[in-house]
Image (cartoon, rainbow, N blue to C red; front, side, top):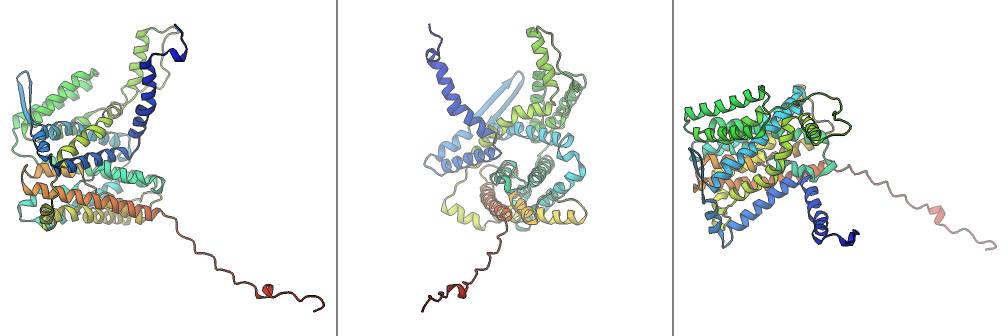
Length: 455
């Protein structure tokens, strides 16, 4: 049989075509900063269209399907919606914990002075929105949702900034990222402290014991990943049974993950002149352990969190009835107004005001950023989609009209904030127009015809 290119099996040639036509474009899409936000937007639109279509009953029935999980003596019964919010979102918050740990040890939060300004701005971006929300809802049943407008959606906010490319200074992007991470820390604390019901202390003690076991295994240099998966799953289950929201287990495990390399040597990998398979495997292990576990896990899990977990969460939580009666009722509901103005106005005022105060106290502004651009970032911080929906689901029970009215406020505020931030940041980055030079008046002497000789 000929070995030329035309004799390649059809399957192999198909793989080459698929790689060029599908796999490589997909990989390029996943590496764009704007892509997670686009996936989240697509899932949200699908949920909205689905719920407002003739097939809306199938949406409700799907997420109410019961999943029965049994592992030995442990038994857990959750609806599909609860499995997404309590299970998949625990992995999402685990990735958030990894990001926070990396930033604290080797990233922007390591330098206290550099992190002080966005952290201070984030505090303002949490206090002011919660205050505005309570101004609308204090003393009502909706008051428990005060934590909803405190959140910033990292994927959407960074996606808006990424769309503007080089028009936004790199230091301002880091400012927004650090602000959003500190905002996540605040949101996690709010969930853990204020949105936890009755606590079963024996289960909570069991979860603490599991976390302690993780630390002990790290000190003993146990590196077998499956054992950490088993212990981590037990920590999640014990936290869920304790009454503390199970996503807190994900954050705790992320924060306990080592952020420095297990091997710190800088020399070349050593193998024999004629390496065996064992040598190659050992070299691979050595190379892998020179990369911090935090970075390895973040690289592994971030695509799943950004392109699977968060879109599925949006699909299961963003289904909002948008009929005329519902919108008219929501437009005057105090909870909708509190969420909307808390995110759109409160985030902007809080971030900008606390940034100004921090600057007056001597903290450095992002290099190359103007105050107009800081206002744009403050508006972008009002895109509080994912975590805001998450806290909304913790504050109100399914079927409660307040839950849906808050969702409408979150959706409207996120759209307005995204459009407003894009417009402000584009305007702030536009070069100043130079005044047009004055038009020269024609020289009358040159327009006068020269006398003709002999005339």
